[in-house]
Image (cartoon, rainbow, N blue to C red; front, side, top):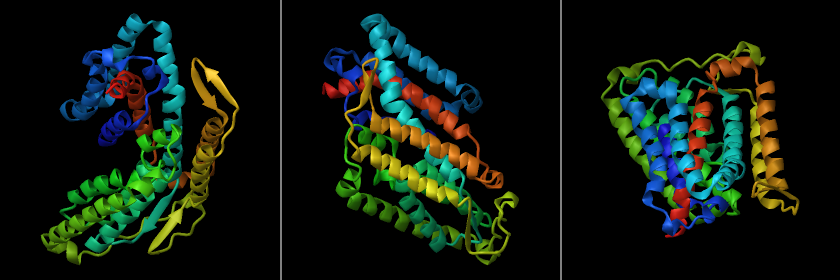
Length: 357
């Protein structure tokens, strides 16, 4: 999660057009000191979980708020409270809320799908799971694909002694590189989509490079995994793990299958979420509202309300046993929501400076 936050924040800073609040600033006249809160927040995300894990776990929201205030208070003093309020409103309505709503919908839908499998963690099976995860990451987001596949992968490799590398490459391939093909995959791409970039721009322009990168990572992983397996003779003869039983409340009779899915209604909801995002990019409407200088268009509003509906439907229709089997909780989304509230605020002067060259 912390690697994701750093990557997304840096990607957002480098890839996004300027927000109106930043465009009103002359970035060429800003001191680099205005970027200190943004840099400080990123360093906090990167270092505090390692240096002070207990403190970070209990106070990451306060740390984020402190860095946000370290930017907002001087900004309001220098440019006026109105400019500060307009900047916060723009960051909230134009970028932060659409980002959090989409991520929450994909996270909830993925958390409502439980995979039952009796897979054995061989190099071929592990490589195939990572390849499938890379493909799904551009459909349900890197967070959703990671949540969906990490537990089947861990269960498949539970009998192996040397398996840490499996999780490391899972992060490389599924949680990062695999989401590069659509705006659904990575938040910076989604924010670019909100700014008018075509939905299929990345798959058209960097599809071959992404496939090359993921392919090379899979080749390296397969070689490393095979070598690690040869170092673990007991794992080569251990019986295959039993498939996770179907949750009792899912209405499915437990049986030994190669692969089974519970909470299948969430596949329909996933398709609905994808359709809503596509709709918001294709549908053009002159109807819009101005909120403190920020334009809120009808297509985006329909998309966001629809995604909230997808989230609520998933929670209502997914059997409780599926969530229990997935160990579903809101803790990751709470952390994402708090961290990115600070990131979207403190990034305003950074974008202004980047726009000024």
